Image (cartoon, rainbow, N blue to C red; front, side, top):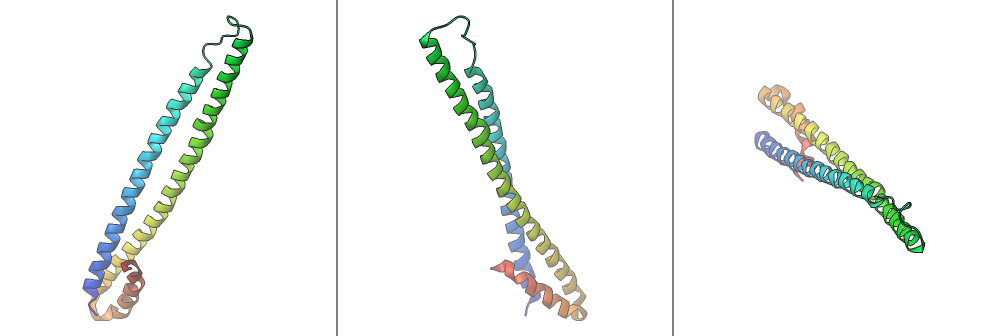
Length: 142
């Protein structure tokens, strides 16, 4: 059994997986920043819906209908920019957390692969430990 080439493959797979996870995390963090920026802009916009206050200068049924429609639009937009956006941001956070956890597992496996490299350098005296470590890491090759 050629431990050296097996370890080389394992290091390659782990390195690729770590880079892939880092890229996904980075893209999600950027998406989260974009959504938060859009949310903040939307919140500023909905504040403008209720301006100016027309109660003193405009009266009657048309004024009441207009204010009612304006209040309804404000409520709908408020729910979108607060509730819906917050749910979406939370989903992004959960995905980032899951990817960070997976990245931690890859880092632990990488540490084990580094340990296996060390055992390989020790030679005959560490063959059993090396064999055990490499067998534990072979799952990453699938």
